[in-house]
Every structure is written in C-alpha cells, then in structure tokens.
Image (tube, rainbow, N blue to C red):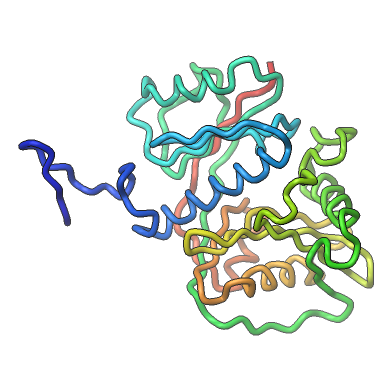
Length: 274
C-alpha cells in the first residue's frame, strides 16, 4: 500500500483518485476507455461532453438511452453525493432518456427519478494469440472498407433490429452510429452469413485494453457462428492487450466459452424521457 502526505493527513491510494494512473487496474482502464467511446459517439452526433474528476457526462441527444450517459469514474459517496447533482444539472432540460453506469454498487437512486434496469457483467480475457476457425458461410468485414458510409447505415439497421433498440425505430439515420464516428478509432465490423449482413460488432482500443463495446445479431442468424466470429475478429485487433466487455446474461456464456472471465457486475440506472 502506498500513501502520500498532504499536510499531516495521509491520502491512501484507492485506485479511483483523480491522480491515480489510468493503468492502475484493468477495471480503471476499461472505465476510461468506455468514457472515450461515449465521447466519440456523442461528439459525432453533435452532442455535449463534460469530464470531471468523478464522472464523465456524454449526451448524444439520442432516442436510445445508452448513448446519453453519466459514467462514474469513482464510487458514489452516498445518495446525497454532490456528483449526482452535477449529473442532474448536465441533463436538465433533456427531452430524451439517459443512463447512469457505475462499476460499483450504488445507493437507491429512485428518489432522484432513476430506475434500476440491470447489472451487466464485466468480462475480461488475458492477452494471447487468437486462433479460431469460422463456420462455413460466415464472413467478417470492417465497415467502410467496401461500401463506405453504406456499411455504417447497414450496421446501424442491424443494431436496431438485432439488439433490439425499439426506441430508435423510425429515427433519422445516425441515431446509433453517427456519420462522424469514421476516423475516430471506433471500429465497426459487419458479420455476414451466406453473403448477407446479419450482425454488427464494435471495438475500441485505448488505455491498454480492447473494448468490445457493442454487438447485435439478427434473430434468424443467431447461434450460427457469426457472433463468435465477430468477437474473435475484434479480439484480434489487439491480441497483445486484454480484451474486455460489459455484457448481458444472454451473451455472457459465449464470452465464457471464448476464455473470458466474469469479473463483477455493474449497476445500470435509467432516467426516462420527461
């Protein structure tokens, strides 16, 4: 254990101080990687971002709550933590739903208008070479390589239908994958079955981890090897780094089969649109 001295009071390293190096832990690396993903999506959509010592606030103005998010970078101190007032102030006046993601258990936030919507699992795989065999008829392609912006439109439609994201139905193109994400480091891959695009998966490499940060497969193409091929291709983006993801219980078994270890569960809250 290390300590620094401020006056006569020691400040013990918690792993979540503003001065803690991002590389202090795998979980801290993920938090800051995901904060960057949120910022990329929000800014590409023409939205707003604020970064503070204990929270990163991103508002993409999306109909989809996941793209308007307060991501905590340190544990809440209680239900009266001033950081919650900062979150409320940032999203005040927003006419769309928002989420709050914490890698730690939180107090009950329902008195502040939040609804608990789940505890997604954080999974991680140690750096190691990638070797797998695709099933017949399965292919994977980096979006933009062959069809430019059309690939992103296709990927967005798959995400909406495959996740599904019902709240994005009928929304303008760019609601899920804004045109401005190209060239910002967030890679989008399409999965094909017998030549037809049926799945999408994103990866972002930063802060010493490869973050598998979105995936969706159309219902009629599930359990046919496309999801797994997309996952392996994204891991192979940086096999020398840990691969991480936060996942639903539906996808968790697939990650476990690939050698990912479940580490803990996050806490995810949603505040509906007014």
